[in-house]
Length: 260
Image (cartoon, rainbow, N blue to C red; front, side, top):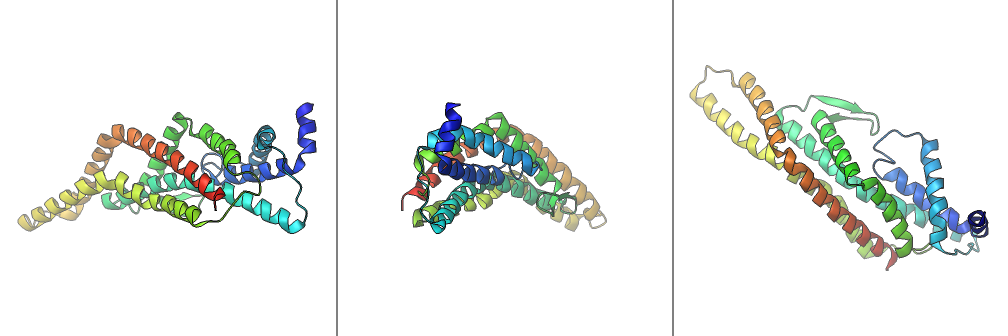
């Protein structure tokens, strides 16, 4: 009963916390874009988490004008979307790596419809995306999202959002990770297939009677999957290291959003 009275006496704080919580859960993986969770479930989870976090946010005064209220809520919305998208960038980079490997292996036509993004995605990219999701859950990434949300109120209080050069620089660095991760995680397959294609080219010149298109297509797929299987033990360790860097970057990003 005391908690309910506290929320009623500090309704503006609950409103600001709810907007930031809902925007993070909608933009972040697992809660938002990874699964097709009904919107009512997302809103209910957002209200529950906001109900728990509101006493930690402190007292928030009611805005004096409607313009100040809209600007404050817009700032909370930007904070949540930015944090959620920053985490999502890692998943996008790994999926992009799978797509690059698929095209190099000759599986570019083997695609599936992604109902979340309304587009065709490579099968190998979907596989690596689900592996990333499983590893993310195994290291309690879903709980870390909630912890980042709670920590964000310690760093960025309501009305504390600042659009600064440091914030834009940190966000651009996060978006750059998509391409860096794609190159790094697809490098083993791409590198070995470069040598395989060179060898196939030499064989085609040496034995013209051999149909290298049919033989080469089967060989590149086989070698590609063998290379993926060999690199799987290192995939988990490398991905966990990426997650550790990601959380540190998210904390730096939240700090940049408060200091002008």
